[in-house]
Image (cartoon, rainbow, N blue to C red; front, side, top):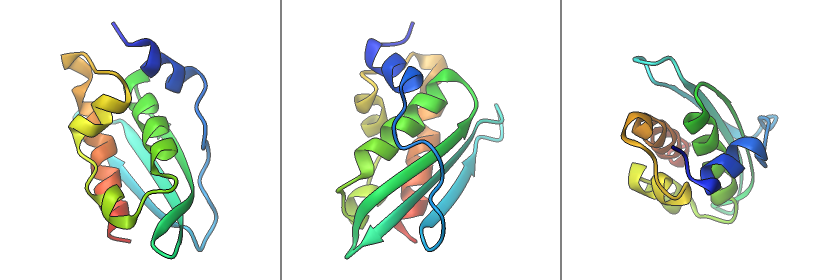
Length: 116
């Protein structure tokens, strides 16, 4: 059902936990399923120096949060804000149709964080 890459992000997530202030943080929720993703980053000169995440939800949502947090490090504010659901899916080597909401959740978090 899930790709080996997605399962790796789920089983061995990096960047776990939220960063303390003055890090920028966002929280997004899928109102249909109740999944929640919190993402925080430390910006240095417009680039993500460090990131962290917490997620509550299905396997795919947790993996999507982990993948996004890991990917974001070293990226510019513009790159983070431009992340799309398709980009999240690519990081996970695909998602089954019933789990595509996880990619949207992560992309929403990235877009919100890019504005902070």
